[in-house]
Image (cartoon, rainbow, N blue to C red):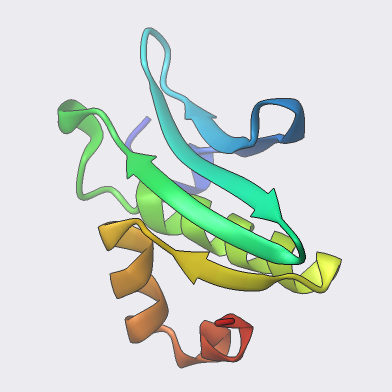
Length: 95
């Protein structure tokens, strides 16, 4: 799995996370939903899979989910905070 297109983001709403199955390991983005807020808690990609765009793909899926659900975003995750700063198309979601 070297091509970013081959990484499939799955939303596991019952577990409050987005994930990418990497075989023996998983990349995850954990969130909580409270009173109309989509709270981004933690993003983790196994070291062997870093810098392949996986975290960005999960963050994009999370942002699009929040937008589609009419939720405002609050980020307590350093990765997603930087992601939003670099992607002005999602800054209107901050709440």
